[in-house]
Length: 126
Image (tube, rainbow, N blue to C red; front, side, top):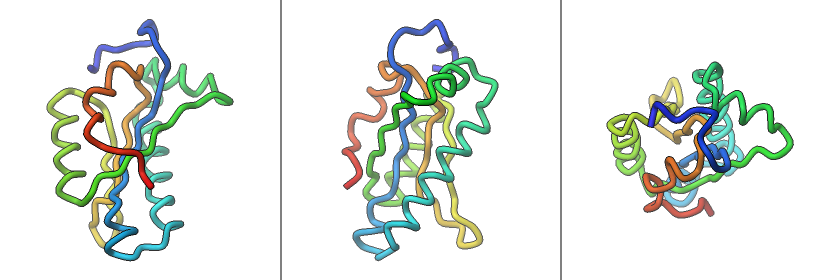
């Protein structure tokens, strides 16, 4: 995964995975959860700013593509982070401070076909 570069075919996408239990079971305000996703997406782009795919994604400012998916709980989010790390997929697990609560994660921009198989078990966030 780490070798994918600007020459890779296909549309670039940034996946963001948010814990749905924050809204549906723990009654977090929707705005607070959206803020968590924004933090993770921004951090992932910042951490991988020099990456060729990230640069190409930013050059296409008016046609950026993000997909926001739902993880049912903290265990699922942490498991996904571990799987992505094992597969060499660059991402940022956002942990809200000072509470130390993992809330979401965001991948750096990748060609969709390179990472979609790793994300298939998660549904769109609702």
